[in-house]
Length: 299
Image (cartoon, rainbow, N blue to C red):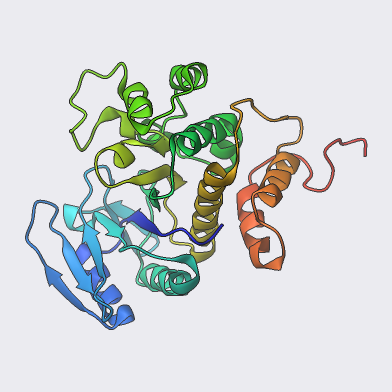
């Protein structure tokens, strides 16, 4: 489940883009340069040739710390880290250590900041994309509570559209083009628009259909906690693997009388097994009610 390539975008504030780029260049052993583009991007080129970007994002509420207090700050404090293409086994330690160094430098995530994960879509088919939509739809309530999605971010990562889910499962499209047509039904704006309204959902297929061929998951509050970020990455990779390998998936919601048990058993089913993923399971069940050990309280 960890084999797919991915990219991550981490939004934060607290330090400037230039400072974040300097820290990344030092950590990666690379060089930082300012592009002077619309997003005031700083590029950090690592020795392996991959480029890490630090960009401005208008959705971020900019702040910095003065003593123990957080105060408003200028747009230089709007920072979105955009990684190059990564693989879990080779790059997770590097990414986690970079996150720790940014946090030590007083970077932090405000309530408006999010994390977006882009998953390689090369192996996806009409069946797997429909599976992905159904998986997210069935787990909407569980995921939104487990991930504690901030109210300030709900307009940027809406739950799956019930009408979209119903259309996909009724029509059972057999081609990518047919799924694409269903995805954009009801929108008046041009499909070519980068910031198309359809993208602002937990699962975003706009990025898949507009040339990047990536499936994006947007349902994560930003964190500069290396363990939580690792948990989000593993969850995204596991969901992607489930969508690709499972013969079919239902949009039916799971039992809800014991949220923690439902999440634990689901995580085990999609690959969160053993000591390696113990911390991931803890992070992803921490905010849920119930018992992870027993489905029914009487037991």
